[in-house]
Image (cartoon, rainbow, N blue to C red; front, side):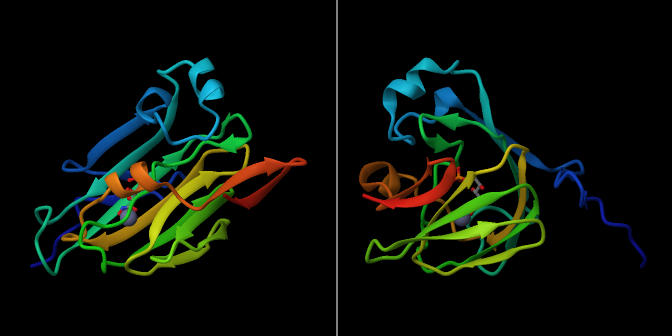
Length: 185
Ligand code: PAN
Ligand code: ZN
């Protein structure tokens, strides 16, 4: 049998297309507690779009042995001296790893090890990033164009947002003297 894929990946925009693609969006109002400068966050229009996530989930969430494919488009912008960024998470099955690939834009992949050591990998078109298990991950858009990236992760990984919302990362990427820098807290 010869079949054509029903899901397609656009390599310029990073967008996925196809019938069963799941889509979610996060606005400034959805991201309470993500940015250190609360007053700056409160000054922004809560309906401002920060990022969109598309996911291709060929098996049900939680199935062991499957894979998911996703696209994230993170708008440029800032909240105080921080850049627009994703909430960040661990995986619920914490040992599950993940790949990120940058399609376009400039980003910072913020990683935190189980002993709370935070590091950054700069993201540029074509860069591939392996996120090991037990590693919290968040992405900031440090450029002026949308950051477009792809991700592939196990279908039984799940998302643990609670740990990061309670304990945060031990470092943040901030604009210091005009330059994106990792500032440890
Ligand atoms: C990604 C992220 C996506 C959005 O698909 O879920 O970039 O980030 P948050 O989930 O932290 O809001 C991924 O890492 N999946 O596991
Ligand atoms: Zn993840």
